[in-house]
Image (cartoon, rainbow, N blue to C red; front, side):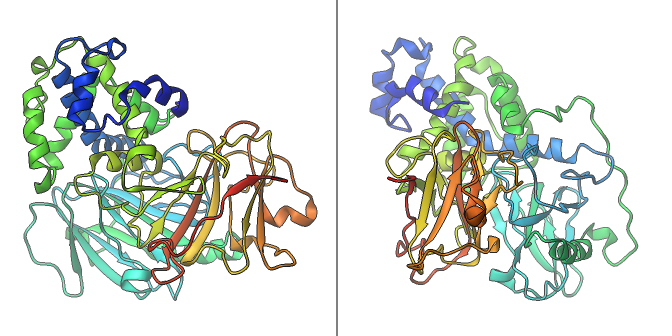
Length: 476
């Protein structure tokens, strides 16, 4: 979707996110195409935004787990995906993937019994194993920052589970039956380091509690031929009509209950037929405006780049320190779902996104750009940092050197004054500068600066004592 065009199309909404006065004024605006029942329309829009993470997680789960055996970026429920190399430009399962770590992940269901995750001794290597519930909240995150790199074992339990765990197994409780383990192990990308990380991946184990400590062979997955395995998940979600969307949301909430803090919001949705634990009652929602709900609700989500108070804008880079745990900021939760599903807590990673250069102009491969870090001013991160190139849909860009991100592992060359320039352009800046080159596409693109385990003491992006330098047109 072209966010700029769509944003302009709904510019009349202004700061519509929750302002009653604005909603009242909009009752007169014919372009909404709503007519009578405007209040119900806003409720439906709020419900769409509220449910966007859960629906997206489910659609992601369906695609990723719809195979008989683990292969590439997919594996059946309860089985490990072990990415053996960085994703490439053909990858479409999750928006904004990274090219710095090897994913070691799995979707599993803790509704019937807990699952046990065993992590080997990582021998000092940076890693993290965040666990997301169905609402995309990172409810636990074992890793080098939080639990060290020694061997460790956890049991992930469901919302209603009560029982006794084996000695040495720590409980992590999920709010929902759906759990997404989205582990990341840092890798240098060389053949030698790939092999070292592959060994660690193979030593990671995930089994149901009933099989813990026993020989265990998972059953083959069941393939559902009706699942669309080609269309990007976000596009599949955004294509859903409102009735289908709300039916799925209500069905999912039966096994993946909302939080206690959501009660006030959910009480409003009962008026339009959305009640946790019950099927969607479409008779309570007028059909004449339902077709507008998905499109305009997604516009509201994407407008958060500009209007959400938790978003910061620094030299053309927008970011938040509120990822991973959202409370009742449903719009922020939906925004992160749309552009970076699987986002970590800020202490583990911050992801400044830039759609425009330091002068406020949209990036385009017809131009050449430079991002200059003054001496001693490279991103302060105790894990790692990288600058990643995406197309307008937040997917990798095909390029002649298969480089999707640039970081310190490229052996960056410094300038005479100790500063470091990153060259962001379509064509090579020359052999002598290729170590500092991030290839761009012909058309528009988006940049994301990843900072894993950002420093919490000065200089730090978390407390504002480190500033992201702007990206400028070459020669500016």
